Image 1: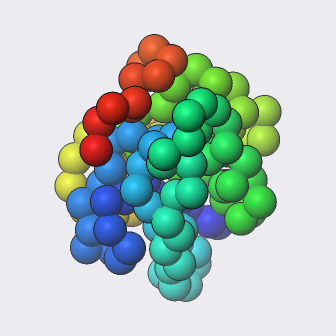
Image 2: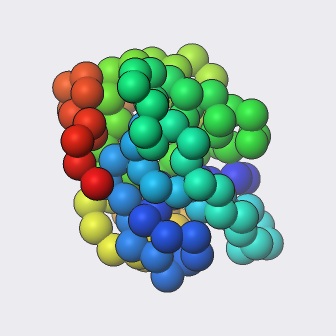
Length: 123
């Protein structure tokens, strides 16, 4: 299973980024091997559609689930349509989020957790 975590840095000890569409990075982990790859989010400075673009990026990377702090309505719809489950974690590192996921301490959310354009202007 491939799990993406929104992150402020590019490794497992990076702090989570609470934004989905405008997160700085995605750390994608193979839950079977614990190998990971980090990718800069090219949508971070998009004038619009960052959530949808970020969702499509994860679809293209074959992600099965995403752990983030918040997800807007357009991103939530795109992720749901692609069959990617969304889990919310509010703080900690990428490693913490993965551990919480593996231990079943995170529940999937359906739909948006914030309004449209929530992450704009935050860095």
